[in-house]
Image 1 (cartoon, helix red, strand yellow):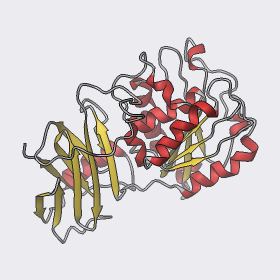
Image 2: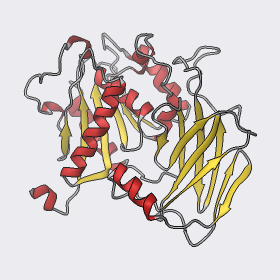
Image 3: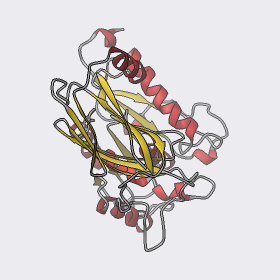
Length: 337
């Protein structure tokens, strides 16, 4: 109650553990405390994962989002300073979450993780899209002497993501093993990264890819329907392309993607296999007294003033529980085929 009554907002860190395959249930291990990986004063959440409910599964994505919501409702959490870190399997889980659910989080900090674990045929469900990593910054640590995921294996993929536009604060540890003995040397950089990368609740640009069945939203963009559209882009840069015909992850039978940006009241979007999407308008970044213009695939699809709508405000406020991310109107866009 003291926290709730204070004007001070606290940052929140999820810390995901490793060794998922060696756990057969969700019973607590050890003390349940953050221990040696403690950093700045903040709230720490240490959820549990096990062999039947790994971090790279839909149940855990829903779990982490639900926990974040519950903690925000009880304590005075800074909505723009919620990050997800993890060690080993937990680091891999941080990569997975970043590709599936970006909106509530400010950044992802995988430590000794390996994104290509997710490419295992028993894990990859065809709905993992590395392009989605472009939306949030990452803080990545891997060790050269790691017996499971050495730099020789992980670094080519880290560099690939960086070349493709993913913001990564990269801290390779040439003598690092599969442990966190390097933490005292990395801790200050870790916390500086979190401090300097607060979430932008209304980012100026978003790229989002989805199968259309779930995880269809990224901040103020919602993908409503998949399907071909007139003038759609055929050449959106794709981080899933690895070397030649090789890909990082399998593809579902169908996925759609929107790259969208805003400048003033102008919204521009390029789409691939998306026939309808919705843009959510916040009075924090749009001037409701002036027309809003939406251009999709080079064609103007909307140009008018929008009316403030209490139902829209209440709908998204109830869903998001986020004081910094309020929407006064929305525009539904249907693209011509």
